[in-house]
Length: 149
Image 1: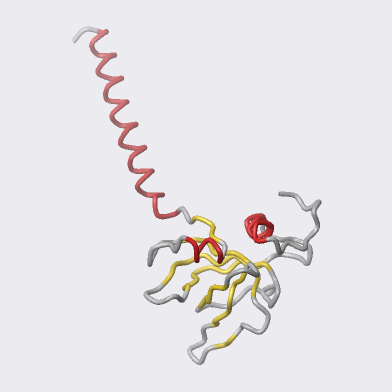
Image 2: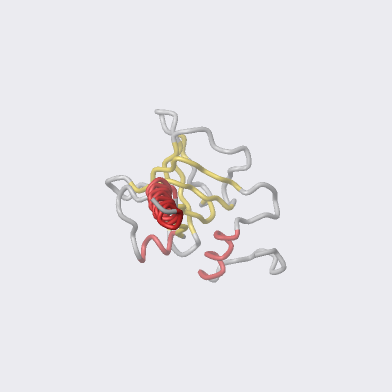
């Protein structure tokens, strides 16, 4: 095999390996992406059962209920719509009524959102950007207009 043919064969093999690597990477990360929804977005365009999403808004005052099986049920609202959330683990220390929260999980067979992860704001002035934007769109944002986007 001449030097030129060997070089072309090496380029072809490298291209095939690169295509396989990219394909495997896309397949591996396809289920890792979670899209952000506000409660109004969920009501307008309900995600499929089992589809992993991030649901964000405020924890509705008076909605936190400890269940006998150790789970917690609470309601996330954007002041326009409300979604019930069930979480089976320990809630973050800063989780509370009226606080910004993002729950990552999926809807079960009913209308209950089953969260696998709950993220609460980390201080009294921070609001997750996705939650702040959803509240602005709903017309209920009462935060500092100078907060970084």
